[in-house]
Image: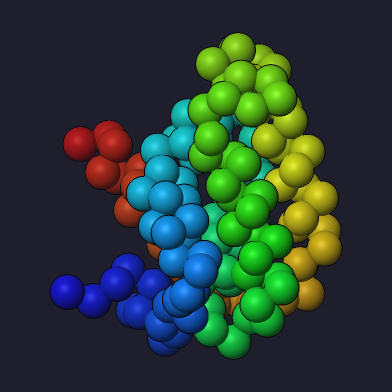
Amino acid sequence: MRAEYEQFGFTSGAEGPDEAETRRVKARIFDVARKAASQIPFMEDVIAAYYCALDPATPARVRGAIFAALAYFVMPMDMIPDVMFGVGFSDDASVLLGVLAMVRAHVRDEHVEAARTALRRDRRASAA
């Protein structure tokens, strides 16, 4: 079975010591994104950064920063617990915005298109 990001022309370059973190983030990213979508208006950018981190052409330090921010995003208990409606994702949004600002130059058009496709697919799946 092909990985979902391979259809966009790049394969996972996230191998090695970050592999376990990559699997944890991948398993939870869309569930948490669905819950946070009403509170984080730049969710497409977050998912585009996720695809950027999966791209082997992305420098390792950039992938590491993205995965660290995404790992913080998917953790249910952090500085402000995500279950607190209205403010639960505010700390996550701050971390994500900071990392997105740092890595924006590495997010390419194909990452953005992969994010749009994945979000459309996720919306259709959750509506069914």
